[in-house]
Structure formats: structure tokens, C-alpha cells
Image (cartoon, rainbow, N blue to C red; front, side, top):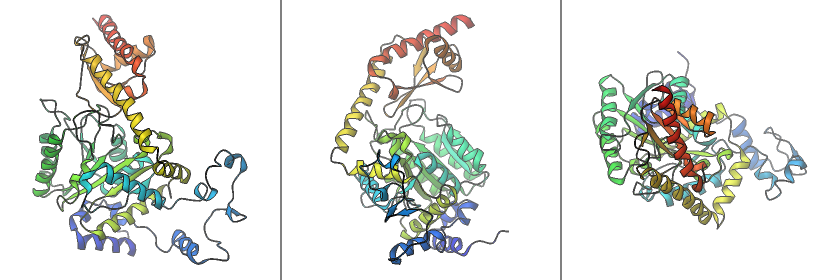
Length: 439
């Protein structure tokens, strides 16, 4: 068996002492990983503090006291100092950005008040955050419990990369509400199969349906997770908050992360979020991972292990986009501009509801409940979603996403409000055209 690095063992002992359930949640990789304290980064950091004459440590080039750079790049980025663009960002991210995002999190999630949680760690967008969770907590056979309507990347990240077992439960119950009973059943089934730990992925607003539970439904989710923990299974609850803040109706308007923090020793909340969707900066690739625990020592150990994963994969995230985001968060106009874009998105969602509630399309498709986010999902009748998708592309030059046998995802986020009627009229027409050919 591989000899464990003393630093990894020290972190594991720290977690074991504070909360042994969290140690049980860690994958074998999660137990083995650590952030090197005596390597290049730590020595460079020490030199940065003390090497006042010459600093010949880290692998960047310096010219006349500033990071070396090409003028063809800097002339287009002249609003920013070279030191905030060209050097490596720290593995955990730009400290000022981490602080600013934490402050934003607290404002957006009042339930975090009085709770104990770590400083957000910067990731290379949200997908990277999910990958870190998979590395730290999923081994071959680890149950990863997700709704049946979910982002396909989960399977690649957990099942293909880590060998975890994907366990699906119906997103909606018979009343069109979040199916907390099925979530609990999946967790208890895992316990009966002898599993010590499971990962639960909760994505609100949901991709592909655009659904966020109400406050009451949110409480049923909390109750289900607590019952599972009390039954003796450790639960890593990862909240995929990619589309956070785009809540258009009477739903929860904050992440479940705050309600989960401090809830039970067997529940480890992990918030995965990012600026990409929230602040409309998809190409910036800036996301965050945040842990909640009653123990400061556990939070420190998880941060060190997360930094170890980052160091071993991407080394650190892109510095320029972290700087751009930080400046935006500090700008007095940031919130007003964010609200303006929110209102555009809300108007589109409301328009879609108005169109679908007209009753014109009920013989061709129904729609799943939606109230938030970028998307909504149709349930196609009388043919397959893939046939309709192909027809829309070939005859109507309209792109949609087919999911499974019946579901067709429409991203109203990228369609102007005045064009939405045409989209749904065309989908209806495409369904009828396919049904006629198949009859």
C-alpha cells in the first residue's frame, strides 16, 4: 500500500479528531492529497516576504521591477496594472477576490448569518469546482444521488472520471413539486447496501428545467437529509448554484448551503458557484468552492486538500479574469447593472409562461414547472424529442436540446423576448410535421 505523505496524514488526523464522519466521506485520493508546505510555492511565498534585494524563485520573468509583458497585450489592458494580470494567481485564488465573494455570499444568503463556513476557494469556473468535489469525495462505487433531470456533465465527472455510482431519483413528485421523499429513499437505500457515505448534488435553479423549490419544499429537502444522517449515513451535499440569483417567482431566493451549515455532524455542505452565469461572464472561467463545518480545523484541512487538488491539476486559476471580476464587484454600478440584466431575464421567463399558458400547444407538448434560471423544459407528445430537435434544425433553423425520450430544453436566456412566440410556434409546427410523417 502506498505510504501516506506526513502532511496528508496530519490533515487526516486533524479531521479525525474534529469530525470523524468527514474523514469517512473522503475518497482515497481525498485522504492522500495535501498541499505541499515546503515546495516551490511555499518557498516563493517566503521569498516574497523577505527577499528585498533579489527574488530568484518563481517561474515568471521580470523587467524593470514589473512582470515582463508584451506591449501588444498591455495596450489593450491598460486599465490594469501588469502585477494584476501576468503573474500566477495563488492556488486558492486572489485573496481580495475571495474576500469580496464571501461578502457577496453573505448579502445574498441571509441564512449564513451566525454560521461557520470557510473562505471561498477560487476554481476554474463551476465545472472545476464539481470536479474537485468528485476527486475529494467519490471513489469507485460511491453513490452520487442526483435528480433524473440533471446536467449531463455530472456523469462524466463522477461516473466516468471517478467510477462513482450514479443514482437517479425523480425531480418532481406527482404534484409537480420537488421529490424529497425519493431523495430520502435513495439515501436510505445506499445505507442498506452498506455504503458509509453518499454525495448528493442539488442544482437550483435546475438545469435543464429552470426549477427552484419553494421555501416549504426546501424545508422538506432539509428534513430528508437530516433523517438520512440520523439513520447513520454520511452525506456530502454539494449545492450547484450555477444559476444563482435568477429567481423569478415565489421560490427559495438563496442557496440551501446556508440552511445546511451546522445542521448535523454527518452532513458536509459544499457550495459550488461562480461568476460565469450569475454575472454573465461565461468565458472568464471563475468559480468558487466553499465548505461549511462547525470546526475551524476541519475547514482548514479541507482548504489545504482542495489547494492540493488545484496544485496537482491546474496549478492556479487565471489571474486576469479574477482581477476583472474583483474590479466589477467593487464598482458602485455593479448591483444596478446586475438588476437590469435580471429584469431582462425575468421578462423572458414570464413571456414564455404567458405563451405556454395560452393553451395553443397542449396537443403537442406540456411543460415542466419552471420559475428561475436560463432554461425550461418541454415534454413532447406523440413523438420523440430527438425527432423534433432534428426537424427544428433542418426545416426551421432553430436549435434546441433533446434530453431522453421526451424532453426538449429551450434556453430562453439566449432568445430576445420578441422572438419567443416564434420559437414556440415553430416547436409546435415541428411536432406536428414529425407526427404526420410518422403516422
